[in-house]
Length: 307
Image 1 (cartoon, one colour):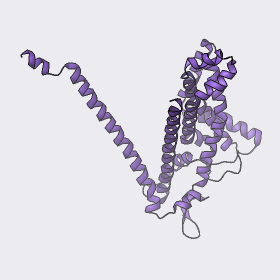
Image 2 (cartoon, one colour):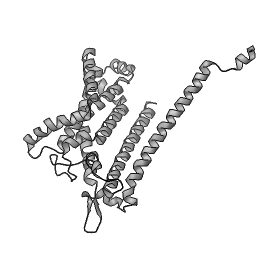
Image 3 (cartoon, one colour):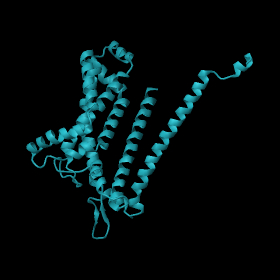
Image 4 (cartoon, helix red, strand yellow):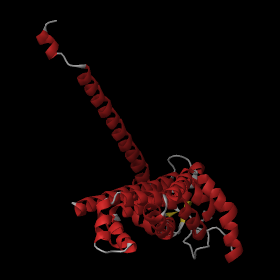
């Protein structure tokens, strides 16, 4: 082989780069097809109740009675999902409202005030809380939280209050860890410039660091809400699983996820009760997409603001 042919032949690094691109494109294609397949499958199953069974979307979203095995006086199935939708949003919002101030306080302490050893220890605790399976949280809630609420307020102890307590502990490490990352990403010269201008440490934290980290903190809160909204097993164990509009915080209720986990194994594929559960799954998927779009919107505004 002459020198010209050697120069024209692709090198090992070029071939390696070529194969790397092919593998990357293949993986991206597989992931894209998988996501599209999941969305199509859930959407097709979830729309069956409206297309095949003739259920009104308005009745589904605003109805107050959930019992797909029976019909009302007009012959319409009782598939009102509003109590589960309301309860899902209630436990999610309440748990997030309780967890966010504490998570933000812990994040500020770890990034701005705590010694390195204390921050390292607290980081280990947060990582431990993230790694605990949800069934363990649910079991602790069933054994500790529910009896405590029953002893304190009466009733069964199961309900929104018990679910909020369990979800609060579950979303706290998620919001905390993401808030820590957001606070650490604030440029160091912001802090130095604020101190140089005569601001105190707390003024710097409040006026400079927190305001600069707002997009990241909002993203952390949204991710925490997404986890709380989609949690199934832990909530199912403490909420009471009664598909009724809750009268108060200690009355048994049911979320979209708990209704799904309780009923999906007791229905036959293709029947109205099964189609109704798939419609609940479709609502959950749409809410997950909404949370993801909200995160992207917050990040986009944060980037444009920093620019």
